[in-house]
Image (cartoon, rainbow, N blue to C red; front, side, top):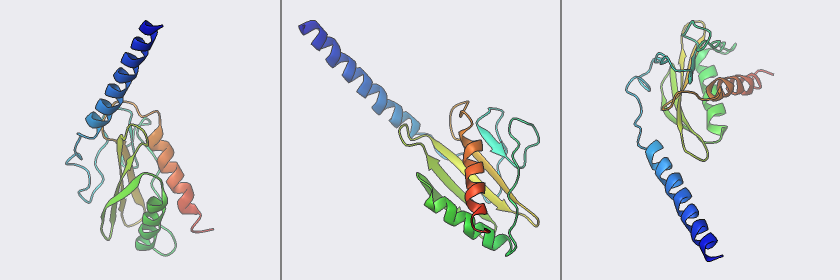
Length: 154
């Protein structure tokens, strides 16, 4: 019985070290220099990024339409949608650019999301900051934002 208790205590300590260490590791990755600059950064080769500027099937996603009230209004609506989403922080906002960070609830992984308003569309990019695969989280997030944005025009 005593051996089982010791094993349990060691296991709990091991799990705590992994969780605390993993969170510290994740939070030590700075923002890439290509993100937050006022333009859409390119996607890496890894499948953890989607962008309306990319042409390959792995990364390609449709841009956002500019609403009837123009790009400024659509960006303002996007800002409102992002501010209402869990675990999001708006980092940069200009007349034609919006950049936000999303953090996953448990491990605190950071995803960078950018919007750039051009003359006829709003380009979007959403990418995991670290890792290789994101299990389609970024694609699902962009489509969720698109759906929430559509509620402004209904």
